[in-house]
Structures are given as structure tokens and as C-alpha cells.
Amino acid sequence: MKHLTPIYLTMMNAFVNSSDERVQYYKYLDNISMYREYRTLMLSAGRQNGKSVAITQFVNDWLNLGNDVVYISPNGVLSREAKEKINDLQKINYLKLHHIPKAGNIFYTTLRAFLSNSGSYLFREHTLKNCLVIVEDLNIKNFDLNSLYTAYNSNITTTNSDYPFFFIVGMF
Figure 1 (tube, rainbow, N blue to C red):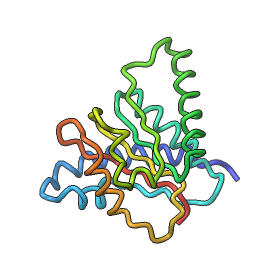
Figure 2: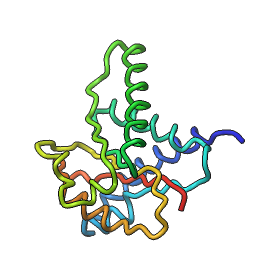
Figure 3: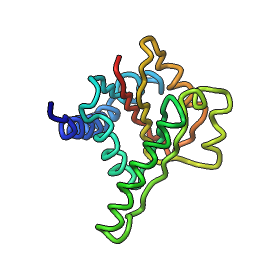
């Protein structure tokens, strides 16, 4: 079976572009409705078909544009693995370009820590620009995304009124 990495990358880029266009017309919605309807992309597919590789490449490109990322995984081990993959891509960019142009920040956390009352500790004194929230390996069938959106609103401050993107990756 061939990996679907290029297809996932194309879909993520197309989603970001079309979502930015739609948000301009639907300013009357509250934040959570906006997140749910126009800012959440759910990537649900089988195992080992290129989702994680596509996410890693997309995050690398997103960071190189000067944007920020919040990477949420179910446990600390997966967070460390994602951090190593993204750091490796950043090093490759540095070797190719001899500099990383205005790279953004990336924050790694677990789902439990993000949803808890102390979820804001990681983000204190940080104002995020054009945030991308990645929730990887979400295998909970009846997970309430509204709790994720509410935690985002209470934990994170952003520049101007940027709406974040939520990429939910898993098998559900």
C-alpha cells in the first residue's frame, strides 16, 4: 500500500486556504461555533498510511512561516517522538537554507494536561500567532471536542483575533 502523505498535505493546505476565506464571511459566529464549523479538520484513516509524516511536514512548513503550533498527544512518549521528528526536519532546513526564517514556536503537551485546570501553565507569558493545534492519536470514540475548544479559549492568548486551526488525527 502506498503512503498517502502527498494527498494529506494537499488536503491540509487546501483546508487552511479555504477556511481563511470563509472566516471573513462568518464573523457573527461565536468562537466555539467558528472552531467547530470552519477551523477543524479531522483526519481519520487506517494505520501506517502517512498521516503522521504529513502532519510533521505541515507543522515544519507552518513553523517556517513564523506561525505557532500546539502539539497535543495522549502521552508524553508520543510528544517526545513528535518533537524529535520535527526537530530533525528543522535541522535539515537549517542545513539546506543555512538559516531558519523567522521560525515560530511549538509547544508540546498531553491531552490530559491541556484539558486540566493547570493547562495554561505552559502558555503563560506567550502570545501565539496564527496557532495550529494538532491533536494526534485521538482514539477516543465519544470525545467531546467542545471541551478542547473551551480549554483553548481559557488557556491561550493570541495576537489580534486570529482563529486557530484544529487538526484532529486518529482513528474514529
